[in-house]
Amino acid sequence: AQSVTQLDSHVSVSEGTPVLLRCNYSSSYSPSLFWYVQHPNKGLQLLLKYTSAATLVKGINGFEAEFKKSETSFHLTKPSAHMSDAAEYFCVVSVLFGNEKLTFGTGTRLTIIP
Amino acid sequence: DTGVSQDPRHKITKRGQNVTFRCDPISEHNRLYWYRQTLGQGPEFLTYFQNEAQLEKSRLLSDRFSAERPKGSFSTLEIQRTEQGDSAMYLCASSLADGNYGYTFGSGTRLTVV
Image: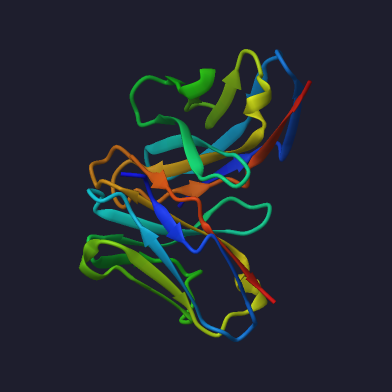
C-alpha cells in the first residue's frame, strides 16, 4: 500500500519570499514521487518527479524537491514566490514498476500575497 | 497533437439519469487512466487500460460505472442511474507504458447531479 500526507492544506507567502510545501510518504516498495500543480480550470501539470536517481530533483518554474528516505519526506521548495505560482499543489506517489497508478495527496492551496 | 481531450467539459444531469463521458488520449499513448476528483480532495484512481484491455478497476468503481476503450484509441466512461454522490470532476490521462511516468492529463469533465 502507498500513501502521501500533505501536512498543510493552505499556505500563504508574500511575493518574492521562499515557498515550502510539505509532504510525507508511505510505501511498501521503492517509491516514485511527484509534485503536480493544478491551476483553476486547467489540467494537472507535472512539476517534477523522483524515480530513484538523484535525491534532489529540479522541476519547472524554479521548483525543486528533495527525497529524504530517512524522514520519508518529499518537500517542495522555491526560493522566490511569484504571483503566477498561486494554485493547488499535489504530492503524488507510485510504485516504481507496474501499472504506474498514481496516489494523490489531498492538496495544498498556495496563496501569494502581493 | 493537442494533448488529451475530454468531452463534455461540464455536464449537469438529474439524479437517476445515465451519462457518458469521452476521452481522446495522445495518439501514440497505449495507456489510458480515469481518475475522479471531488471538491477539496486529490484525484482518486478509478481504472486504467493498456491498449483496449481494462487491466485494473478501483473499488470506487461500482457496478453503475463502466468504461471502455474500443480499438485502443478513445475511451468512454458511463455512469448509470446517477446519484448526487457522483458529482465530481472526472479526469482522463494517457501515457506510454515505458516506466517514465509520462502522464498527460486532460482538463476533465465536471459532473453535477441535481
